[in-house]
Every structure is written in C-alpha cells, then in structure tokens.
Length: 173
Ligand code: SF4
Ligand code: SF4
Image (cartoon, rainbow, N blue to C red; front, side):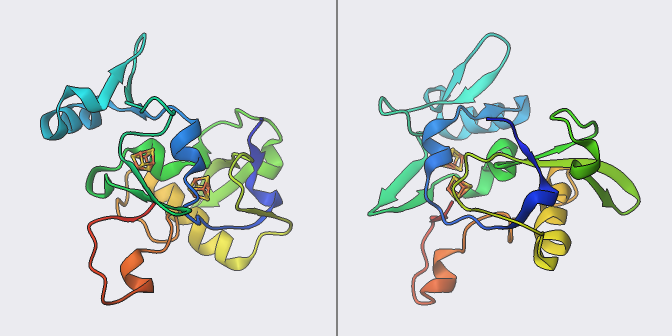
C-alpha cells in the first residue's frame, strides 16, 4: 500500500499491537548489524543480497518480539534499529510517494516530505491535531536526522509509567 502524506492524518499513536514486528523485514544499518552481532551473536540477523536484516522466527515474528496476551514487547530497547523507530513514518528529502504539497513539512526552515504507512492500524484520518504537528512528527524527523535517539511520542507508552511499581526491562514497542 502506498504511504500517505502526513497532512491527511489527524493523529497516530503506537498501541504496541506488534503487527509491524510480524509483517515486515527490518533492514539494519551496518553499524546496527555489527553491534547486534557483537552483543547477541550472528543468529539474530540474516543477510539479503546487499543488506542485513533482523532475523525472524518461523511464524514471521521478529526474534526480539515477546507477547503477553495481546500486548507486544520489544526486547531490543537499548539498540532498537532506526527502521523500527521510524515505522510507520517515512521522512524524506524528496516526495518519493507523490502529492508533494500534501507531504511537505517545514522543520526549522528545512523542507522535508513526511508520509505514513497506512498498514499501521492506529492511524486516525483527518485534519492533523497540534500534537501531531508540533510533537509527534518533529520527534520522528529528529530521529530520522540523527538529532535524537530517545523515543517518547514515537513509541508506545512505557509499561512502568502505566504501572509505576513495575520495573521491567521490556517496554511496549
Ligand atoms: S507502529 Fe502501528 S503496527 Fe506497529 S506496534 Fe505500533 S500500532 Fe502496531
Ligand atoms: S520494534 Fe523490536 S520487536 Fe519489533 S521488529 Fe523492531 S526490534 Fe523487533
């Protein structure tokens, strides 16, 4: 399905449903691959033609995905690949998926093109809310540009903020 310009999205938040951790292949940058292999061994990755990917289980899910009931947890929080942090958004220099005027986003005077993958079930369509424009999208842009690593709006709510007495290694995706 073709990614859709951000200006059609009222709001988005990740609920940790885990669909993206089951349906997609996660491409790794070389330094991400190296760090993962050094920490977890070669078995957590796999090689394609010119790329490295996170490995999958026979059911198609990421090897770092854990599920409890219908809540998914990522076991790779401290070195989560950029591709995982950015999904379902695409932050681009050029309007690769068309509709340039609808996809254009001004970030500190820089014109970028922002799209969202409609396969994520948590997209609310409509006029973008101020939180979407001033918090969510800028955080995705900053992660894409390498200006920040920590996720707040771009990931699901940490478990320990829902249950303060619970100090778990895992967070919802
Ligand atoms: S990004 Fe979307 S598909 Fe992936 S876990 Fe969050 S809500 Fe689910
Ligand atoms: S977010 Fe975590 S569990 Fe999901 S694909 Fe990425 S590394 Fe795997």
